[in-house]
Image 1: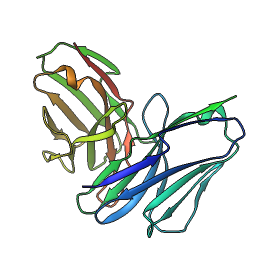
Image 2 (image 1 turned 30 degrees about the horizontal axis):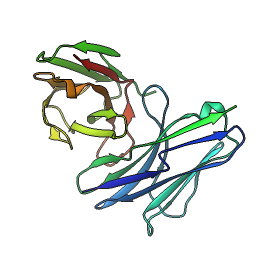
Image 3 (image 1 turned 180 degrees about the vertical axis):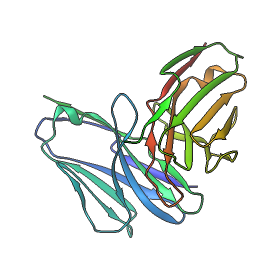
Length: 111
Length: 113
């Protein structure tokens, strides 16, 4: 059974801090790993990672994948209150053509 | 921009009622998905469809069925709603089997009393 584990489950930081969100996985026939941000509405796409060691970057957010150790991290630098959200990690399996989601990480950024 | 819409944002139904949740996407996507999201459990796949009139069971299909008569529309049906089906329901679509990114609708918060 495919499995995606995110950690920590929640964290609280102050504006300006840097945070690292973790995602580990066990998936048959791995194809890609995706990160989403969910505020009080639909998840919105952040990154898709398919190759090890290649950093994806968008503004203050960046992410990298390690296919040998089966994990990914999402970094957010200089956090802002608008970064407060649930961050979801999902992995696509070529064996069953499905996305398996982790339970999400709730990030709260205090002013 | 891809747009995925769901028929209702909030819905309250009684136990035993038949419930229809509708999802429409406007980008000619091949694939459509229904998830439910519950605190502490994350998103769980109920059903998905890779083509018109085609459906596949996800991880938690019990108590649900689906219908895809047109490419742009994917309906989730609760034949006899129960209180344990109170949840946030999210629809998603994606362009094709080699494209992994899914685009989500705004969600329907269903309460079964």
